[in-house]
Amino acid sequence: MPYHHGLERKKFDARQRALRRKYQQSGMSETEIQALYQFDLREFLDERRYQEHTQPFVEANISASSSDDGFSLHMWMEEISDPALANRLKSMTHMDMVLLMLYAIDGLSQSEIAQVIQVSQSTISRRLKKILQNLRKSA
Image: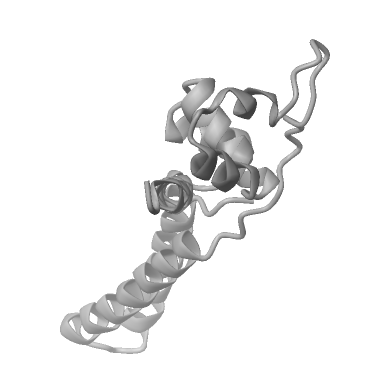
């Protein structure tokens, strides 16, 4: 399940309100409470960045290898006149090929692909950037 920043921030804020009440009851000053809040917020944001950048890129329930109309995942590659590019395309992983097809052929946005595959848009962006860099090698 992808990381949902808004939901996690809501939970964080609720925990911080409860902690603030406990800190006030124990006699802590507002400056000390604010310092602890700032520390906790930095930790929360660090965790958010970690979660967004380490989401597993798992195979979704997308089967683009063949469909009911007889379309094959690699069928369109036979029309590519550049043999080096065709070979790079054929050597791609199944998931990279699906991503490329969703983006380039089906015309889905990165956000739409992220919803389909259930990862963050930034994960899709990084993956597509890597795919396109690989395809441009020695072009």
